[in-house]
Length: 240
Image (cartoon, rainbow, N blue to C red; front, side, top):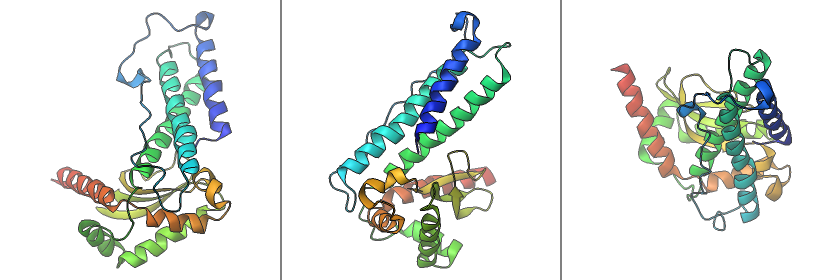
């Protein structure tokens, strides 16, 4: 999610880093490698926002342009400011920039994965995903019950409900992510559900339950299956 607080944080940190340099300018000798390019593109929605069942075009476009797009723009600014960090940069400036980088990076990634796993008919998990969910939770129905429960638990606050491939446990697991800085240490998201109010308030007000119902009707299970296959291959390579 991109809140007003996040936008203000990004603006303050960018300004603070510039002030940390002599004369308020970047050093001419600043090193710019890949980590400092600040050129992350805003990816377009991978579906027609007019065609998702239970989601208005207004909600989806606002979510994409303002919340996701804001995170990408702020990440680019933070990376540019990190390129100016030097031996005399105050520690609080460095820490603030790194905290902002983590928040905006995770927001960018999770939003892209969230939009990427929408646009389907939500009818059935693909075979490989079905098998993995049954092995981990006994049945797909039990997994869905728990995933919905996490979403509803977050509905009165904020956060993400994520089905990750856990490389430590070698299987799919549900994880809570409150804020953009919480995540399982060694996992790959398979299915991401945004539970911040900006993801549903325009259409559903405070009714997280109705939003979750709409989310499940639009899951793109083929994309979840693709992510699962990639994660399982990576897991096998790591174990081999």
